[in-house]
Amino acid sequence: MVDLGAGDGSFVVATAAANPAVLVIGIDAHGLAMARAGRHLQRRRLPNALLVEARAEELPAELDGLAGDVRVHFPWGSLLRGLVEADPRIASGLARITRPGARVTALLSVTERERGLELAPLNASLGELLAARYAPFGLALSEWRPASDSEIAAARSSWAKRLGAGAHRETWLLRLVAGA
Image (cartoon, rainbow, N blue to C red; front, side, top):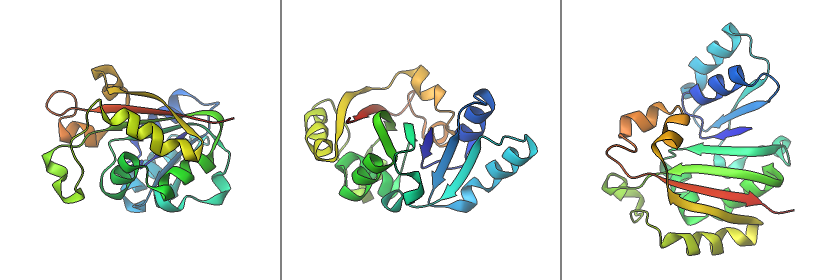
């Protein structure tokens, strides 16, 4: 499992602890953000977790074909923009690191707060456009809908809590499936 945009790494730590037979890789462009998670992994002796400092636009080749499950929880900045617009650097990276049949699940939220990114608020009509944008990369849109409160909570995202996701801020679930 890959957590792209891992932030503070809390999802990586919790998932690795709950699933000792699963390799969990947290990737974030800001290595310092994951430093605390690194200490937790060492203290709890979780050998099934790795933290990687890398930009979503430049994923390491060592990850090619490795992921059966990719999660992205409440991205911001270039990762948010890249997922909503299916930026070729991000879409091709996702296609590269996933194996056939893998799922990519993202929880996305865009409101007036993200005005600087020049992204419109998310809505149901965006689904067809997302499907068309991801298809050339071998990623098929399987779901585009408002996320449930339980899906938001399962992300264990401290960023989601700060944003007020779910309760005060609309959140959308994007699910893609990698082609065979």
